[in-house]
Image (cartoon, rainbow, N blue to C red; front, side, top):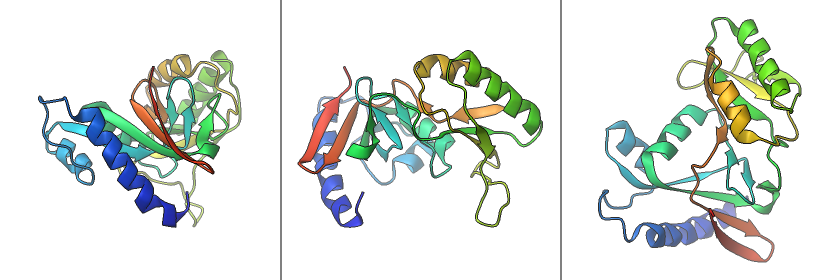
Length: 200
């Protein structure tokens, strides 16, 4: 997304969020920027606004985690009454998987965890190369939580829910970048403007 388009798009999304949450009286007033801090302090949030690496055009299931904060992002999404994602047309896909799937793992037993992740992708019908994410210096990338990330280049994930369940069952996996059933709406920006899509 071009930086010059971001303020306009965010303003549009703010209006959409307000429409989505206007009838919810059981949670505090809508806030955009401090939502993560609110949740960290135990305060419920009406809505979370976030980007996505891929958005499934039918289910609004997502791949997230490009920036390495997928665990915190999923906590915020799950704790919010509504989640709205912003994406451009290039991320609006018929099948998830073109973007590598981030999987946050503990450092201990990394090789064993990687083998288990590989087995889970094969069992889910979407095998592909899996690599340890590294920083610019060539060291293992470390998340805010002190974990590593495995990036799985799977290309086509035909059953994201099944894969997500298999990954979650692996002891060394902290969290994965499949956001299943969490997004309530998506704002998609394209050459002809923006459109709002709500989850069926």
